[in-house]
Image (cartoon, rainbow, N blue to C red; front, top):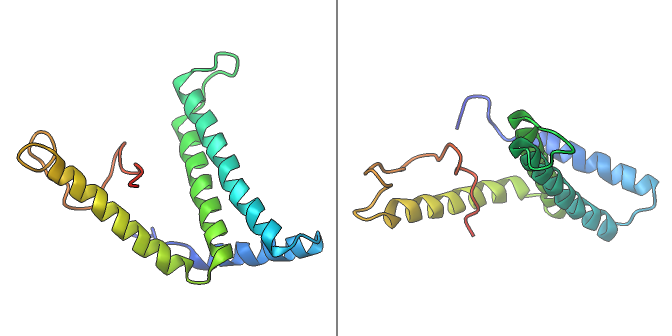
Length: 140
């Protein structure tokens, strides 16, 4: 793990508590609150999609967006998903760590073993943490 790149568990748990208080003030029950938090993930996915469209200039009416805007929106997706998960279970952080390890290991093994002769095209093997454009690819 990169120095300073620890998962901010306390901050995410604090957000869940704050949202719970806010929902209580608005008479939003737990089932509806969870549904809204999951919908928030979808909303953030839409914003990330719009940022990618803007980065590629595919909507001339709206102009271009930046790579930083895309990254910010992708991080908003991740944060919203973690808040939703933390709203379901108290052991979300441990489950997330185990999930990341399992999914990334599976992806890396598939790529390492998927090229003729093993490894990536050109003979290199991943073996460690993934980085670059494909690092966040879905592993399902």
